Image 1 (spheres, each protein chain N blue to C red):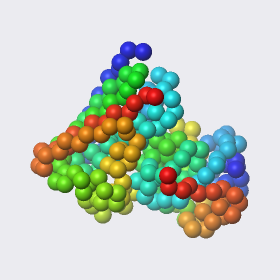
Image 2 (cartoon, each protein chain N blue to C red):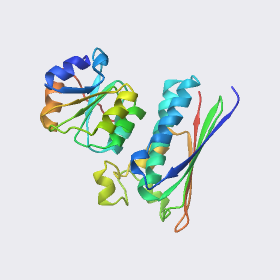
Image 3 (cartoon, rainbow over the protein chains, first blue to last red):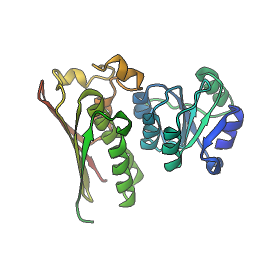
Image 4 (cartoon, rainbow over the protein chains, first blue to last red):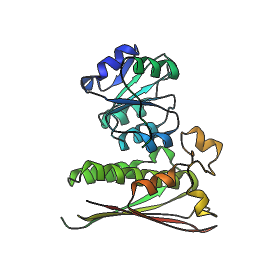
Length: 116
Length: 140
């Protein structure tokens, strides 16, 4: 799935990385616990989270994730957006809650990640 | 490639900086042309170790020794120490405060993750003195 489809499905606002929306992603992960993301995530994936701090971007960076989506209408501060922009990570926000946002992407064919 | 040494002082009082050293290590490894799997394993080990220093100790240091066949990470802090290392290695066990959990960490996955992604890991900890963690990632 291309990131522009993620944007459309979630009716999301893109906060940075507009020029990277044609990138392909193959899986997604919904988590507020960054420790879980570090334990299970595979690359070329999307992180959906309700957590707003710079470590969300750092965690995504370490895991080579391509996109962060903030759920429940949360918008990070400018420093967090700039951190993502610097690292070529697309950042979006959606008004959908976590469960709904994950469900919509899953229904559209973006699968989750199983534990190794 | 000659061996390369990176040193970082980690100031535990500035949480917004937590992860900067790991980011730099990842950048250097990528620049040196290491395999993406090696880079990711190093990045995760370094990041988990760095976060532990910010979350559990008031600061510390990280040294990274990069050689063509192996990358060694040494993370040292002067925090409270780990009373029972076997217990701390169990997935899900954590002594993290509520505040740390609200930041998205403290799920008890840090040390097990470091063990999982490194080829060798040694923990040397003394209660009341601090903790030193050594990890080796082999370049296969």
